[in-house]
Structure formats: structure tokens, C-alpha cells
Image 1: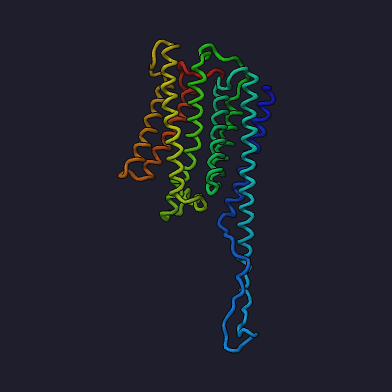
Image 2 (image 1 turned 45 degrees about the horizontal axis):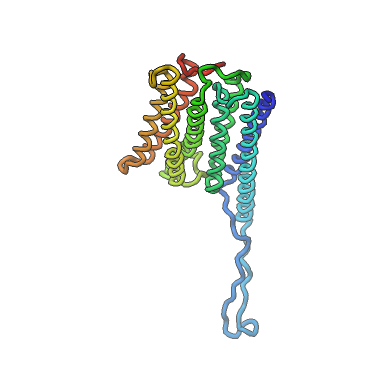
Length: 326
């Protein structure tokens, strides 16, 4: 099962890569608009001219070749986008298979080390994206950036974080492990998805304001800034209460395991920093005097603190929360 899990991760990375390429094709062709094939014939009233009714028909206005090419390009873009969405769904299915078979091989929930944590968080992000896409197909072009994130994180996990399946360390053998870690993973996966429209909004808003330098030029084919900003808020507002519960559950578990609810361990400290930053984002978003781009930057900073908590703390600090095998 462990070998099968490893193979499924490889196939999932390749599938996300193919989906990313398909999204890139849609993105490259995305400016083209469909043009009607032909204008309908019109009847003009005339005085005794033409047939019995005294009318003549004008021939349909021919479609210019450039418009025809634009229409075909738009059709190809739409096809590439649909293919990308289906391949993303396939990649997510392979990804889920990798998580499940890893858990079967370990005979526990597959969250015992940093590799397994990243593997599961990225799947939550991909599954949440498919749910968003199901509800709002107009946001499909965001898939280019989401699949890019999936490829980078999974490839990094495979190359730098991979460890063999091992039993769960004694400190983690508790029912609180499932409660605390599952909610942290779920919230982190939603935050992972949430940072994609956040960055896209910052670029698109700049483009709509007339900025034509890099990276704003990347956003010229993205959905409207207002929709991206609303999606950013919705995802963060959904994830924040779950993250709050996860932090509280971790404190209760720490009290039971170590005899203290909070000890300013490096991971506890950065979890608190992340919580404060995300709370600051939601407060700024609800404050009319705060500009939306300022609030969105706070959300981006919040995700950077999450990355610091996941990678920086585990690589550069030693604490009670250090993952095995890293």
C-alpha cells in the first residue's frame, strides 16, 4: 500500500501538470470572443419593388475572416478549460487515493509527519476548488494558478519531505490527534485555496486601475476583481472559525498531554500569530474605511505565517511539535 500511495502521488502530480497546461492554453486563447456566424436576412419595405408583397431581402452580412478566427479561438479556449477542469478532478481522485492508501499502509490517520500533512492539506485545497468551480464555473481560469500551487507543493513534498511509513509516535497516540490535526488540516487547505483568489484579486485590481507592468499583465484574462475579492472573503470567513476551534483543541490536548494548555512553543507561537493576522483580515474586511486591497494584503500575510509555521518552524526550530522524520 505504501508503494501504491507513492505511485498515486506521482500520477497526481503529472495530472495536475497536464491540467495546468490545459488551463494555460485556455488562458492564452482567452481574449477571443465568439462572434455570430451570420446576421439574419432582413426585409425592407419598398413601393412596388420586388415580389408580391413589395419587399426585397438583403443578403446576410458576411462575417469577416478575423471574426471567424476569433470565434474558433474562443471555442478552443472553452474546450481546453473544460478539459482542464476534468483532469483536475482526475488528479484530485488520484490524490485522494494516495492519502487513503498511505493511511491504510500506516494503519492510522495519515497525518503523522510533515509529508503526510502536506499531502492531505493540498488535497483539501484541490477538493475545495472543485466545489467552488461547481458552483461558479465563471472562475475557471483561476485553475491555472491553483494547479500550479498543487504541482509545486506536491513536488516539494515528494523531493524534500518524503519519509517511509512509520508508526505514530507515542505523544500523538490520542483521540485529540484526530480532532486537533483534522481541523488544522481542513482549515489550512481552505486557507491554501483562499490565497489564490487573494493574489489574483491584487493583480486584477491593479490591471483594472490601468497598471500595465508585471505582474498586473498576468491578470488581464482573469475574472473581475470584485468577484475574486468576494471569493477570498468567503473562503477565509469559512475557514477561520474552524482554525479557531483547532487552536483551542490543541490547547486542551496540550493540557492533557503536557500539563499546560499553552507554553509558547514555536509552533504554538506561530499558530497564535496566524490567528491574529487572519482575525485582523476579517476585521479589516468588515471595516468600511479600510480599502479592499489593504485587507487582502493582510490575508496574504496570514498565509505566509501559515507557511512559516509549517516549514520554517519544522526546519529551523526545535519544539514539542516537531514532526518525526523531518
